[in-house]
Image (cartoon, rainbow, N blue to C red; front, side):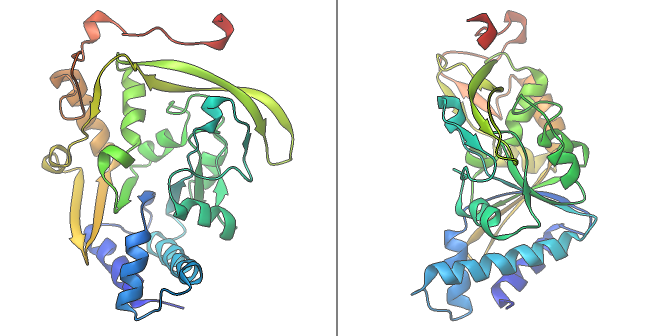
Length: 287
């Protein structure tokens, strides 16, 4: 079944600049999206689960058609329990960042999950094999899916989310730059792979120094002014479209020449590379 609301939404994305061959990194909060779709298409919300399933299926199929076989889609299924020593199972560990990723994991077999136990993605399309082959231990490393999307000049698509709460790509940039208020921290927990084999593994994240009073800004107007971001309101839905390569350059320039003031502020610290890192790396083999 095709819903007019979804058709109109896909048309809006096309007008915004999403096209065949694009690699999309999609962050979303789709509850309001589902409600708005039901109202416009005169669908009862009594059986919300069934309605959501049908809308999500239509949305996925039309997104795949929009970017085509030369395009790619990556949907986050992040889960931070591994950082607390909780085991990760690549088949069953749920996403902690929204219903859409979990629905994709459970219902769309053409999507497969990347391997990292903290920052994993459900991926489809041309770049999927590259991302599935990633064996990165560092969440935001140059060998991660973030790097593949960056190199492919991918686009971040944010639906009813804000940049500070969803633009994880900015942490990849920070890791590439080795921003001094973050450091490498390793975590160890049981890891269950696709074959059902469970072993203890170590993965890392370039985490922030918690002794610093931190406020992540990731200002919309900053990225809009440099041409990286397009943002619109459509039928009361917020749509953000960010060019990853352009935002990477702008973020680097801001960190290196403006102390990152458009990205992050602190009450008790100023970004200063000359003073070195504020915290030593936390490596398990040094404990």
